[in-house]
Image: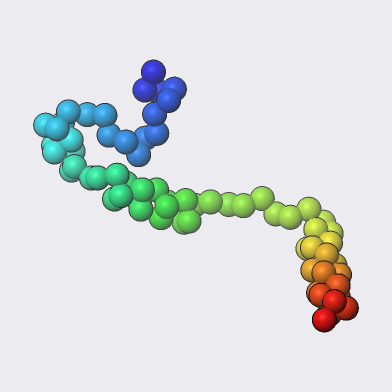
Length: 69
């Protein structure tokens, strides 16, 4: 059940084992996870033309805002 439903941020060990392995609390483990993700995550590149499409949407919306003023 723990393997299926638990996050590895939570420590399910007994207090004695927890203290032996360093006893990091949830906040410390969460910060470590965030640092790991920020250092190691490799986002997928945008598909060809995506940046231009987003720029066009933004420009169209900005034009719409100017017309409403």
